[in-house]
Length: 220
Image (cartoon, rainbow, N blue to C red):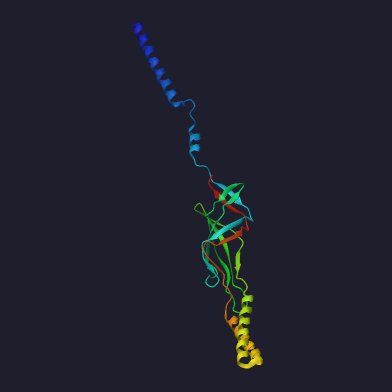
C-alpha cells in the first residue's frame, strides 16, 4: 500500500510538470521567427516622398486647346501636356503626358491700320497621380507678324494700275492723276483690311518656366 501511494504521488507530479512544460512551449516563439510588430511594418507600403522642382525649371508643352486672337477671350480655359519629363537629381519626378491647366490672360485682334494681333496665357494647375497642384508659371505670348510690306505692295499695285489707266485715257498728265487715284484706292483697301491673326492648333509646341518652386508627392 505504501509503495502504491508513492507511485501515485510520482505520477501526479509528472503529470503537473508535463502540463507546465507544454504551456511554456506554446507561448515561446519558434526559433528564427520575426516579431509580429516587424512583420506588420514590413507589410506596410512605403511612404510617399515630397520632392521640390526648383524655380526656373523649363516646362516643354504640347497645347491641347486651340487658340486664336479672333475667337479666344480672356479667362478662356487652356490645357496642355508635358512633352518632356521633369527630372530632379537624375530621377523622373513629373512624367511626360502630365496635364496642366490655365487660362487666357490677354488677347487682342489685329487692327485695320496698326496694331498686331497678340494673345497671352498662363498655366496655374498641374494634375499628377490623381492630385491637383497649384503652379506658378511665366506667361506665354504670341504676336502676329507685321504686314507693312504687304500693305505697301497693295498701295503700289493700286497706284500702278491707276497710272496705266490714266495714261491710256489722258496721256502723261492723266497717268499722274491716275497714279494718285490708284494709290488712294490702294490705301483705302489697306485701311479696311485687318492684319494677320494668331492661330494655334492643338499639338502646337510651346514652353514656359516655373516662377516659384513646385513641391510634389512622388510614390516611393
